[in-house]
Length: 106
Image (cartoon, rainbow, N blue to C red; front, side):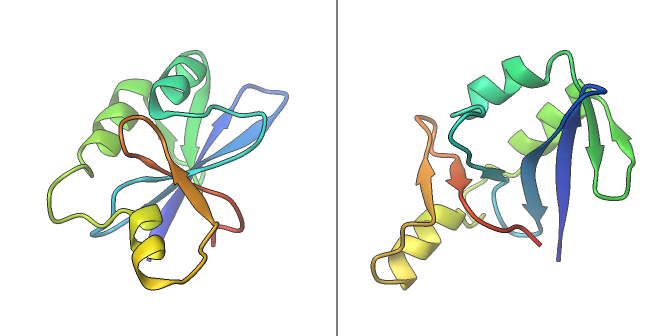
């Protein structure tokens, strides 16, 4: 079970990614969107952040939330898929090792 997060600015809504217990935050990869966690921080600075239940999350709290998931026992989606599924092309890692995954998030 996990929670999806979105960035809104009144005109558009962008899927940031998903937080699931025991996993590092998994970012939604796109061709035109932010390409790293550092890019997301810049992009989100002036946006409204909400979860899938429409609960607002402050920029500062979201940064803490994401970075709190980077601990030794947490699973990384991209690394997990590369280890367990042959020819997995569902994601990539940013320079800091955060998982960016294409496809459907449910």
